[in-house]
Amino acid sequence: MTGRLLEGLRVVDFTHIFAGPLTTQTLGDMGAEVIKIERPGGDAARRYGQATDEDDMGGAFLALNRNKRSVAIDLSSERGIEVVRRLILSADVVVQNFRLGLMERWGLDYASLSREKPSLIYCSMNGFGHTGPLATKAANDLVVQAYSGLMSFTGEPGGDPVRCGTAVADFSAGLYAAIGILGAVAHRERTGQGQHVRTSMLESQVSIMNYFFADYWLKGIVPKPLGTANRLGIPNQAFRTSDGWVVISTANESMWRRCCEGLGRPEVADDPRFATLGDRYRNTEELVATFSAITAEKTTAECLAGLEAKGVSCAGLNTLDEVAADEQLAELGAFLDVPRGDGGRARVVATPLHYSDTPLDVRRGVPALGEHTREVLGELGLTEEELTDLGTAGVI
Image (cartoon, rainbow, N blue to C red; front, side, top):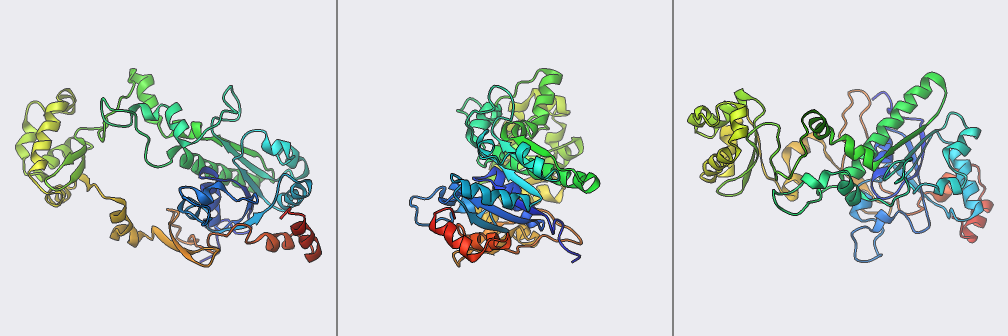
């Protein structure tokens, strides 16, 4: 190993819930030093999905906060803000996803800080963007999935709208923010100049719906719910088997023929109703009925064996517990065991990046609230007497 990708980069992290913590965890996995600033009550994600307040390390928090040190500071106090300002000015990057106006109220916004430190990279993300009539609108993942149009075509035909099961708006924003910060770091390496990087959940969600918009502008197509199917080839959806489900995705004419062969019904490929992609689109209902009858007579394993032998894209419908024990993901190192600041350990999902010379690693586990407050502020130059005084005053 020749060092870590972002070794020497100090990040001050004001993020909470999902989007921002994914950004800073990604940077931390790449070797950045991440200092997570939490209010005295902690990131709300610490208790997400829990019936009691007893455990401040629920799954939502454990998943997104390794490789960070936690500093608990009361930002409603002037002394707390001043300590944080000193910490920011010792750093390279600030990441925050507070509502618009809060960092400005504290004097910790980009305009204020960049005057003192022009090399500072400052990343802001929010729900609906930083300008426009909805810039201050409250947002979460569900709200953005609805507003962006995603929920209008998610679900079964004729059914109620369905939320995508994972937080796609949050996580796409978090990943775009990480990409934006890395671009700004590269720019600063060349010029010495920092800058303000901004993104939002709405823009990020729309970005990953890109080809739907392209089809709309090109052909006027407004997508409707299709269940597991989509318009990029037919058959391209889940089919019932005698003991479960199989997902089949044919991307071209060659795979269409091999698909029929793999299911033991090569003659279906020559059926005039299905001979070309255009024919299959025109006769979608008949094709789905034909394939449903074929797969219903086979087990999922039988379908997969035949299709995989012909190189057809396919999969069984796994449950999460099956995926957690999956041999392929284990081989890839997709899951990690990390220490918890309360003395336990947790199993979490790894960042899916592999570097030949600078592999990602876990240097720190998931911190307890305020676990590193005195350590980090001591490194900043505060004396034991000052730290004790701040603690007595309830600032830290």
